[in-house]
Image (cartoon, rainbow, N blue to C red):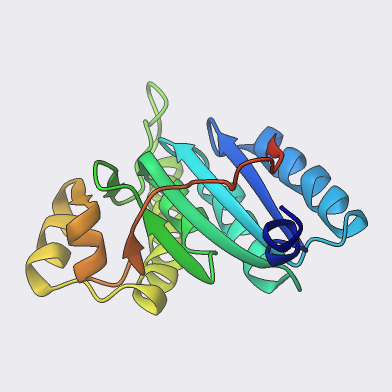
Length: 186
């Protein structure tokens, strides 16, 4: 038991689920404050999310990927839309064999009766969001041309094995906290 506990000194296990939004950002900020207080050097983070707001996802990506804590991210079910960008903050990334990923372009609904100038602003915002998320995706993942063609017009779904093939994950393995280790829900 003593050797096992020593092996994981400085490690922490966490789960994060739900919509990527300002509430999730606040929860992650609070959790990281606790991690630093607890002297966590490596955080194992299981993410379950179908996405949310682009700016909140990019904020979390930038924050987690620059901290002096090594984040290891896991997908045990579904990581989709902007949650993929959040997932990519992991220095190491893993997925269960039955997990899936989904990436797509940004989308929005135009208000009823919107004028052309208002529509242009919406389109420009979506294009800016797509440029930001695609830059992060290209930094970490080597999608094949066929994947980019699908991504251009539709949802791109990847299994864990496909994600491994394009470098989205470093391995196909489960989130398994060691016996006796506390798991915190963020």
